[in-house]
Image (cartoon, rainbow over all chains, first blue to last red; front, side, top):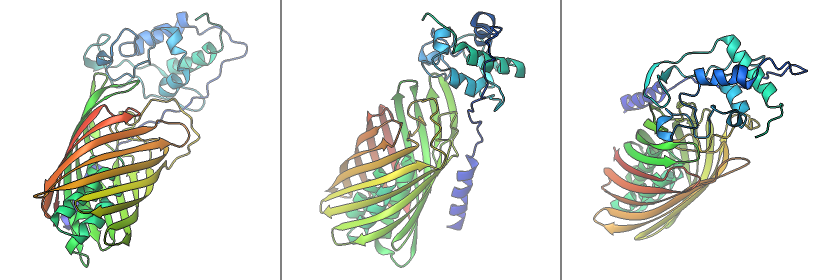
Length: 143
Length: 276
């Protein structure tokens, strides 16, 4: 009986995992907005390189490799629907450096099988991401 | 989990048919994890002839489900071993689910949140039994992989059963709360985790009715759910159960549907428990 108890306890703790916690970076946009980080000059390229193989509005659920629906970063409009979420999962700033995304493994092409190591942003790129988001949410948009 | 308790109470008074009925009810009250329910049910059924000694039970639940919520479409399969212990009015259980989860095309394997529980039978009458329980879920499952809550959950509850052969009716109510600061107000990722969603703070409820069919068989209906306190998703599940067995071993088949809150669209659970 004791052996069974010990076995169950071992099984319980064998499943323990450590996970990163999404955290706001507290990045702020300089005042006045220097307009050095923009969608055309930074955001779109960042998303294309690191995110859109899974987070794209063109991908059906079965080809998103786990990316939630409505988390699409191929358009500025949809990026700005969840800027805080992006900051908390991939951005860097005074309060945190979040490296939850991109994941370790990625598809070679949008919607494809996971078959390669994901390219990872540099620390500077993550910092720029959070600052850009902090600036972009306050800029005027027509959509 | 409350189920366990109920079943315990029911199990003591009469024969194997009653115990099996109790077991069925027990399984349902467990908040989420099928294995937990089984562990509880084991405890419930164990107690009949061993009020002066300890009883141990081991259980195994196998489940398969499909889900489709706002953000995720997919399925999961799980295996949940469980362990139950009971002595007199007191009981304890432990369980952990091991899952294969497919979410939006991504296949993941991993453990869910582990659960430990304890219960106490407070009222024992000829037809009515009632008690209290406390279950705690530990964040052994990955929150990022949608396999766990990401924090410890405490879930006190109260339960009661009424039996007039061949009918057994049971109900429970409880409160679940994450042992973290609830002021976060983060981005809503829908029902989470996918394998057994809960709110960070909620009122839980369950109801069940079973009828003995004779020859150790029992059929019944189930409903349970959670109502968030603050932000969250109201959740409701309904199902039917067929159980059969003996005092030593029992097996149940349950088909469940998600009625509200997208816990899953349909889920099938087969559980078996061995008592000794």
